[in-house]
Structure formats: C-alpha cells, structure tokens
Image (cartoon, rainbow, N blue to C red; front, side, top):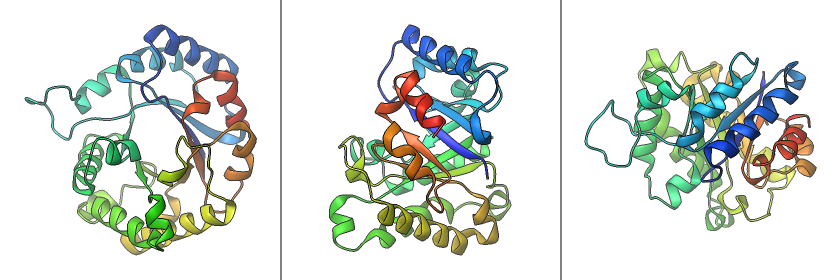
Length: 254
C-alpha cells in the first residue's frame, strides 16, 4: 500500500508563502517521492491554486481542501463548494478534522454528510477520527472510534462502499496529542489503528485492508520514522512540522 504523507497547513501562509513552500517541495521531489509515497498538502483555500500550479506535472504530489460544505451551491455565507475546490486544482478533501469537530462544533452527522457528498463529487476523502483525553482515560477509545466510523460510513450506498479503496483514507488523531507536543506511544498508536482496521472490516468487509490509516498528532522529523514504521500505520498527517519545506521533506523521507 502506498504511504501517504499529508500536510495540513491550517490557517497559515499567504499565497506568496504557500507558492514558495510548494515550489521547494516540488523541486526537492522532482525525481519522485521516496519509497513510492504520495505527498498531499491541504493549504488554506486562498493558497490551493498556487500549490496546485507548483505541483503540476509532478508525480505523487497532490493538493486538497481543508473544508467544504455538502451542497452544490446555495446561501451558505463563508462556505466553499466542491466545484469551487475542483476549480482551484484540489483533488482531496479533509472531513472530520478534530478542530472542525471540537472548535467549530461539527457533529458526527455533518461529517457523514460531508464524506458522502465529497465521494459522490469524485473527490478523495481523508476522514479524521480520534478520541479526547477524558475518553481515552475512561476506556472509551473503541466506542468513540466505532461511533465516528459507523456514522460516517454506514449511510453510504453499497455501490459507493465498493469504490472506497483508493478514494478514502482515515487519519487517526488522538485529540490530546494535536499541537500539544505529546505523541501517542507506539502501543497506543498500534492499539488505535488495530481497532480502526477491525471496525472498518466489520463495516465494509475485506476491502478494509486496502484503506490507508494515517497517524496525526504532533508528528515531527525526529519521531516520524518510528511512527510510520508501526504496523497498520500507512502514513502521517502533519501539522506544524509541515509548514517549513525542509522539515516536511525530512518527514517525507523518514
């Protein structure tokens, strides 16, 4: 399975800054990404076109949108549509990121609507799931992941479920490890990813083995190699350490 190394630039970088970083990545990876990896960048909306242009013609480099609204168009002030993202050059979208869930109050049901809509719009989706600290301490890891996955995937039509390999990736984000400097230990990561793989198998059958599961949570150059080498870890979702090209390149090459 191809490893996915994804960058979430969140609310950082002007268009000029994004274009510069994207060019540095594209030039450094001109001969292809190491170990047959897909490098995926989720910039702010205003930067997507600049990043997509820098990545044009480059193998295994892709760009996506951090957010979108599950409607073709309408009176949704401040939102962005799938067609608008497509027009910028985006081919991926994030759904269910912990900051959307816990800062902006997006429910499991809204995340499910987004996931289904993006798939019907021919986008590839990175669906983020993960527990908060009090939930892990209460032994609720499996319950939380099961609820998030079931809400997002059970409503999908059977015909759509069959197309998920190559179109859906999961990102496990222990919410307590995002931007805190804390990283889930190897045992914690493997436990969560094994739970996710089993839950996926229950939901969609044998094709679950073909869906990548990424780890996201304070990933840095000095821990990336150990994390991506764990069983059932098929890539990384990187926040702050992806903002500088050289730092992100170290993670890509880990």
